[in-house]
Structures are given as structure tokens and as C-alpha cells.
Length: 317
Image (cartoon, rainbow, N blue to C red; front, side):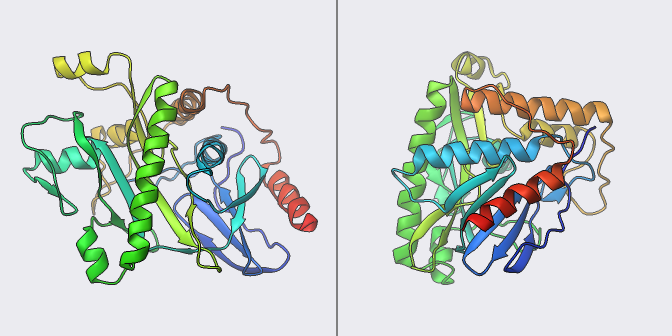
């Protein structure tokens, strides 16, 4: 399987704290900057799978870096540098406790809710008489709470966010404005690649100076769903499944093998063949989303490489 990144145990100069997310390892340096390492862990239904996917972390990190660069003129972001294929370094921010999910199409979670008879999602009405993967008249923002410690994120309405004081009205209006602008730009970028940006999520934080910035990842296959534009309408007309680029293929495989993250369910065994297939699919996603050939990084001594590159950057500071 080659070397992959699971858990990291670095101890960088002036390190104040460490946080392990579902996929990312985050090091706080001197309460000023964050070193965020994209591991090769695979998460689905808010559960981390037992085996890692080769090059997945590099793929997510590099897509996010490219997309942050392509949107920084409309929304400020947290990035300072990308010192390693798996590492992003940025300003320490206080994250907002909501994820800003925006949907252009009735797909994924929204489609499952619709199929169950619901016509409201996060306080936003969904139109009657549409079918799975149809386009909404307007993109809809359907936020979720940002769960701690890997527990499930929960749908929440704008009204409840404001009523519970999770985000102030003034800040939330900025988050909404930024979310719409990013989705519009993401839609335009995707269209140039022959893709449709179906839905995605954005996370934001506040710098020490009180500036709202985009954090974490953006427009990656883990945070977004893409359809191929060619043949989209024909497939809809015939009631066929859409050809898509996202992590949904992993979720579907897990569902077919009896796993949806529910209590008592066993995670199905992933063979080496399945792991390699998932890795190849992530590379395909990278190349389609960015329009560039993926270059595999040297993983012969992956931990040494990361440590050396981060230390070189920190010593430059």
C-alpha cells in the first residue's frame, strides 16, 4: 500500500497545543499560526475508516490551496504558505461553530430528506414536484452545527443559529454573503472543467484582529459534490443516476455493504484492491477538478519529509 499518514506525533518549536480532527492534524504554534496536516484518513458518515487512502491528504490539501488562491480576491482566507504537499500553514483563527452548507441541486442529504417527505431543510423550503438531482431555482444555504470530537453534525436553521447566539446577526450576514460569492466562483471554475458544482460546505473563522476569513478546505471532493456537465440533462430526463465526482462513491459502497454509521453496524472490510481503487478515484477527482496532472509526492519517508519541510518554514519565520 506504500506509506500513508495516519496519526502524527510531531513536537514543533513553540507548539502550544494539538488537535486531531477526522482527517486533519492541527498544531498551534505560539498562539499565532496553525500547521494543518492533511492525513490520508478516510471519513464517511462521520466515522473514520480503519485504513488510510494513499495520496488522499496530498490531493485534498493541494485542491484546497489552489481553490483558496482562486477565490482570495472575493473572500479573504487563513492561508500563509503551503510548505509541503500535505501541509497548510495559516493564521490562528477562532472557528465559527457552524458549517455553511450551500446546495444548488436536490442531491445527497437534501435528496434523502426530500424522499422521506420533508419539504423544509434547515428552515428553507424545497419546491414541490422536483426529483433527485434537479437544480433548485436558487442555491439554498442549509447550515449545520460544527460537532466536537467527531460526533455527528446536525442541521440547523438560520433562525436557530441567531436565536441561540451561536453566531451574531452581523457576522452571520457576512458568512451568508461570502458563502454565496464562493459558490458562484466555484460554479464558474467547475463549468470551465466541464463540471457542475452541486453542493459544498465552507467553514469560517475570525482572526485575532476580528477579521472573518475562510478556513479549512474548499471545493474538494470531501467537502463538495460535482456532476459531469456533459449528459447531465439527458440523464435527468431518463431518470438515470448522475455521473459524479465526490466522496459519494465511498458512501454508496459502504451503504451497499450495510454501513451508514449507525449504532451496531460494522465497518465493512476494505481490501487492498478497494483501497487502491479509492486512491485512483481521488486522483481522477484531482485531475478533473484542477485540470492538472496529479504528481505523486515522495512517500518513502513521509513523516520525515513533512517534519523537515515544516521546520524549514518555521525557522524562516
